[in-house]
Image (cartoon, rainbow, N blue to C red; front, side, top):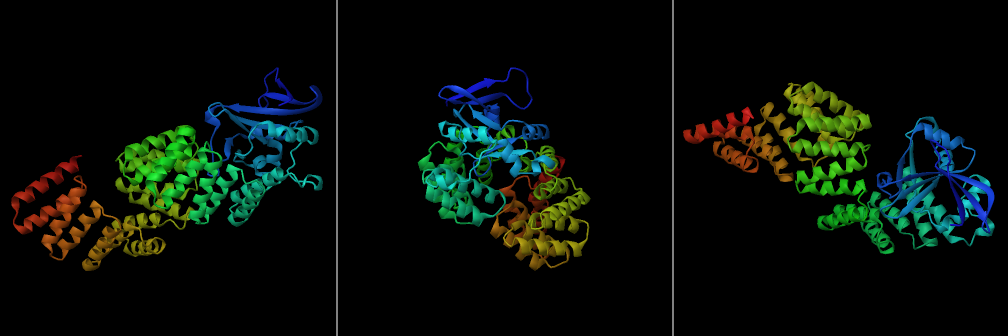
Length: 483
């Protein structure tokens, strides 16, 4: 690059080397300190595709107080690429880094360390910081102006101002229509604004410009999933992982497809890999906990939900999902406590209201159960579990016809073994013995381990005079209870 590189001659806990600006092959005395992090474990991306680097308080303060300008460089030997950030400017723009953390640095994916950086390095060495503002004499430098809009778009996106981010990225594209990173980020904004087809168009363009941009494939896969193209989404996630095996988001998103297919083992494998790559993401632990729960691995599920909460004590979904394990363990007070915390941190979380309603019901606190069930229905009128809870409340208060309608609505939204056995229970209560037996047979066909279905059908068969069938069902019920 035409610069003189000097590795530090002694240990320095925050600086690995210095580069000196050279003119005509001679040093100028203008220096830049650099910190280099090399290896695929450092290549972690956020949803916009930018590199996410986890630092600590000591390094942040050290770099900020350093007498020289400081560059942080992240190297991917696998991709044979490196990305850079002017750390002192970044810290200056994100004052919270000095006060409280979290000590996380986001490096724009467009900041590739290559020959184009020469101008910036000369600036930073002379002025002590990189300036992206374009002077009157530089108005013709469209690429620099495009970069300015791109970085503004990133800041707006991080702050949740999606309309301003969309405008900034669009302006950047007007000035430089060959930036795959900009199309990728604008596609992400379109997705957040529910402009699904526009998002897909931008991701397609990003991939056309840079067929090796793994994050664009990941994001396009996410968009295809939203549009119902699950096979296309899987192909894109596979390609993203093929291009960049350290992209934890691609494993997380692919795992979600496996969950839809109820392939819990494949989902677990992908979540395990994602956690190996990034052990600091509470969402991944939460999602893996749900997979463990579906597999009946309740101890592992509880550990994952606990870890998610340790990483982010105000992450509502983890409390709500942990309450499922407490429900299984019949610890109703713990269910209510977790759901109350979930609702405090995530007031729109319908599952938390539903889980708490279920616990209140089993503590015979019917007023509280009815209140929470109504709230859950208002928040999520298409959530099948809420109609199941509603039906159980109606059975409890003797409204069996209403209960049957609630269970049938739950089944219409999502066929489930538990819903069938519950509707069988309601049919038994009104003397519809044949319908009760049929409903429980459906429940057992869907899940041969549904002990309640065997018990209800046992009583139904006794009523029908089928003593042999009743004995067989009671035997299965007792065997399942032993397990």
